Amino acid sequence: MPDAGLFELQQTLAREMPICTAMGIRPVQWIDRRLSMSMPLEPNKNHQYSAFAGSLNALCTIVGWGTVFLLLRDEGRGGNIVIRRSSIRYLRPVREATIIARGLTLDPEGTHFFYELLRSKGVSKIDVAAAIDDAQGTLVSFQGSYVVQ
Image 1: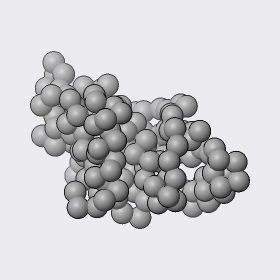
Image 2: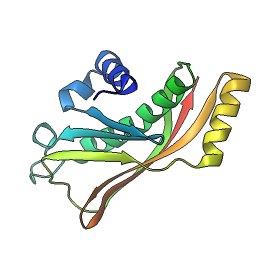
Image 3: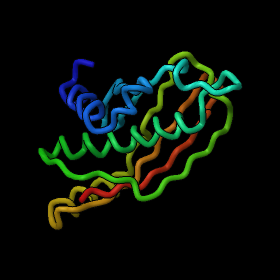
């Protein structure tokens, strides 16, 4: 994790959301405003030896939260980030030893609006999507709406 933004995100999660450390959630990559984060299956598995749905939801939620954190950081700002709503679809069991959730490409108009509202009002909102995939396709699909105060 050589990127300073990812290091700062990891430190913030450890301090502000210690459950992320317990779950093994770690930022992996921030490229083109798309965040990838990982967690190990072992502490997050269920009785079916697949990933616990709540852990998958938490991972995807943190990908969205982290995306907003890094968008703010890129702008030299901070803020109180909260999720206001989300939806998730569990399409197939997740059994990889290391689970990677990837943020999907942000809507350019939505990103422009996010920054414009942030600059003019000091508050903003943005929608972030994430997915967990394997070689056969999507395992988990997530949509979250985040607010910055």
